[in-house]
Image (tube, rainbow, N blue to C red; front, side):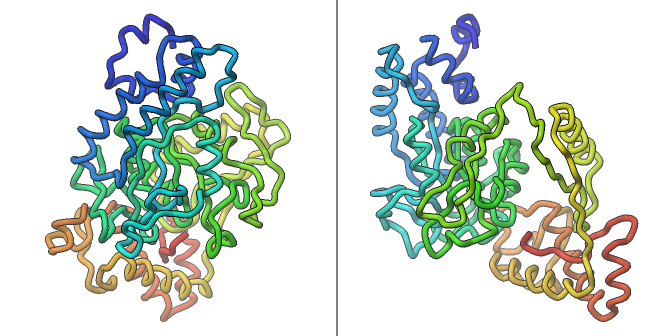
Length: 399
C-alpha cells in the first residue's frame, strides 16, 4: 500500500485492509498500529448492535498494546513480530487465561479461564492484539449462531438471515471490519459455513496440523482450529503461525508444514478436493469456481486429485440419526412437522421471531431427511437414489 493510497484512506477503509497490507504500512511508517486500532474500535461500537457478533471487548487494553507495537516499529531494529499490531478476534469458545470464556452457555457465564488455547497463544506471541471476543452457539453444537446467553448473531448482508455457525461471530466481525483477523474451529462446517454465508475466507486445516483444545476434546479427530480472514494471504500467515505440534494435544504430533505464500511452488504436494459428495446438487457457480481453483493448484505444480463418496444403504440409518441429532440440538421439531418455505424453517413461529431464518441448504437437509426415511423401507431404492445421475441427496449428517 503506497503513501498516496494511505493518505486518502478513511477510518472506514482502514477497517478493511488486510493484515499483509497493514504490516507493510507499519514497517514503511505510513500507518500506525494505534491508528488502525482507533479505526477498528469505533467500528465495533457502531456495527455490533446491529449484528450481535461480540461478547466481550478489551478496548483500553488493546490501545495500550497498540502503542507498544507502535514503539516496536519506531525503534527500527526492534524486529517486529509477524502480526505486530494487528487486531485479532478470538471466538468465545477458545480459552484465554484470566478472561471470561463462556462457550455460549449460561453455565460458564462469568467464568474465567485458567489457561490459553495453544493456537491463541501463538497468535498473541506473534504480536496480534486481542480486542474482542466473538459469539458462538452453546458449546458450538449447531450450524447457525444463536445461544441462550448471547442471542442470535445476524448476517450483515441481510440481518433477517443467520450468520451461520458455529464461528458466526468471528466471520461477521471480519466481514464488517470489526477486526482484521479472527479464529474459529470446524467440526461440521463451523468455519466454512459462516465464512461462506458472510463472504469471507475460512480454512479448516488438515487433521492434526494445528493443536486443539485440552481434554476432553483434544483427541477429537473432527474438530480442527483455523483462521477466518478477508484474504487468502492473511489466512496463510495465520495458519503458518498456528500450526505445529504442541504437548497439550497428542494428535498434533505431525511435522510442521508451512503453506506457501503467494508465488510459492506446490511442486511435490498433493491437493485433494471434493466437488460432489452426493448430499446436495452442486451450484453451477460453485462448480465453476472450484474448477478454477483446481487449475491454479495444477499451474503451481500440485498433484491434484478429486475425492468422491458413495452413499451405501447401510449408512442411511447413521445419516438419519445424525440429522435427528442436529435437529434436536437446534431445538426444533422433527422433520415431519417442519415447514419448508422459501428456504426458511418454521417460518412464522415464535422461535422465528427471535432467530434468523436458516439458509436454503438447511431446508434441503430437511428434504434429504425425508428421503432417508422413505429409502430405509427399500434398501435397493436407497442405493440407486444415493448414486443417481442427478446426485440428489438421500441424507444429511453433521459432516
